[in-house]
Image (cartoon, rainbow, N blue to C red; front, side, top):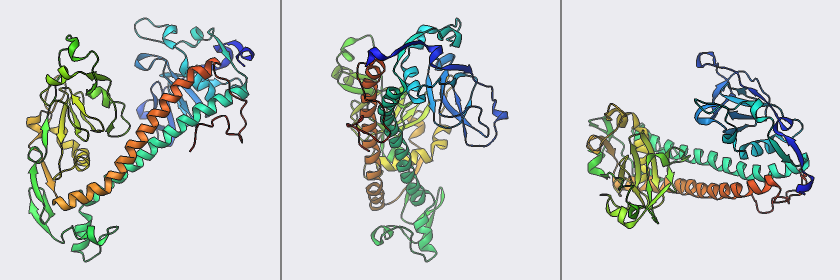
Length: 418
């Protein structure tokens, strides 16, 4: 019960220390995470702190951000790290610190700054270690599943990229046939779609029967716009998704599920490309150049994108991987002094090597289930994150009671399955 929670200071809860400097030239190859104000920022060969550990951003843009590291790590001097959990559960401490509003305890003037001596006197209430473990188990199970989904999506995306590389960059099936070998991993129907010879092209040797065409003649490339933000009729009560490159900065997979802002019918009418259908491939054309995602929802775009409306000649999955593979070429076409930007005029002439429609369809059929699973995992992770964020304040305030933690008893999380 919450009445049994202890009233202590933050300094009685954990001990904090400033991290240690480690410049890029000082880093040595290794597998020890370097934990800074914004989380992991590389690796080193030496650990200075035992895991599990917690690092809190102490200044700048990452002020007050709290990060958990399960393994031994190097705490960077951009953060404060926990040196003593004082018999409290480390993962509970992570969630508890993450829920604190450190903005209230900014001790800086020119820029935000977190001083351990300034926050140590904060009065807090915490349960006993048994209840701490139970709370951490509930929240941790949700986060563990979200992390598992992230790693699974990385694997699925890598599988799609590997198939694209093999078929459309390295031409492995064609080279196998040319050598008199059976293409590896292909059924006879798929193998038959690949020729046994090459032909000359702008790019050198490409499979016989393939074409080289400007991307702008293969798919429709359109831009977007921003209706006046001063006109409420374009935004107030908007029901349509409207995206900017900022929405892409936190994507963990190349699928867009949601947008920060919505727009009205009147706003859509002010954008030349209108509401683009689900499945449209979006490429950020500035600030920065190179964000990529397939829209899982109908969406309107601002002027920071080139939208690729794909088709049977070049599917969105093919074009996604083509853009990823040819990003250096895309970026080289960008111009600008204040910031780099690639215009539709400079993007459309880039040449793409196209296989016959039958082979394009075969590739799309093979990778579509991979991207469908990625999308499903993203939806699940978003639901789990909403649940976690709803539970977090209730658990940390004692509003929800949980039984003491028993490692062999999973009844404290009956709503979770793995």
